[in-house]
Length: 402
Ligand SMILES: *Cc1c(COP(=O)(O)O)cnc(C)c1O
Image (cartoon, rainbow, N blue to C red; front, side, top):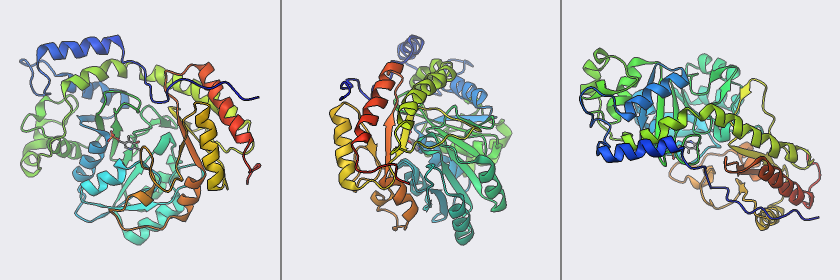
């Protein structure tokens, strides 16, 4: 029996809380939208957000900036990346990650992907050794955390400077340590499809005073770095403020005002995402052709999207599978497409860098599907979606592929 068509939108997020609407209106009425346009000593919304996010993350410092991509770019520059230096990163990630490396003057060196959708530690080690790269921009793509204990052993052994892309792991943790707190810096996005929504926006966290002072000046602080909410003391800036270029990418008070009330809801929303994730996951796990990555017990994930693999699916069957789901209202993203659709996560479409052979990643992406789980979906919606995908998978010409 064909399931009922699903009628809701996979790109519809919840409204921002009423408190955020009120705070935004207040900023608009004040006319003081620029983060340094404050009255007397009153902290700006941007500075308050920095203090509150640093407290949430458990980091000493935080910088609010224009986007997640900008946070990564500034992090690489503040960490001392030199022109044309290689930066190790996941081959399976979203386009802003290699884009940030290139914008910062580096060269992306792509590392293979495992069927668990995380960075391949053997390949990381081999490429770190062969290249002598100093930097690893680890992308926790689609919210999957690699075994952070094993990763940190490699990072220490190869003396790598670790920067974490936590666009999909805001709120996630590994054995109780928050994602973004393992290396020199954590980079977060507050773009609409992430875990906080200000349309665009980014947050950069770190415990390193010199690094954060450089990042703050890079972000365009002029000489107003003392008006930040979670910044090192003025003495740290004495030389840095004169040696560091201004590459404007500040966050404004309007966005910060919209984000602050959302931050107080984040933990509750993590639970709401995970309830929904588990309903879809349960339906998908019941189908023997589908492989849903196993979440390790050490990982506290945020199920704002779900991924599954159909190993060995032929491209023609993929098209039918996508079309059958779409006909029943389920929007799946397939990562194996030859041409990028919607957004790009295939290294084949990043032709501004030399081609890198990544057969293991290509094999994973060829059978990889992805679905957003917005909080506007009810648990019943999630069950219905899971049933639709399971129904469409039952018609596939692959059976329990190894
Ligand atoms: C969204 C995203 C980013 C940053 O995105 P911005 O749009 O620049 O805020 C970084 N990495 C990944 C994996 C992402 O999905």
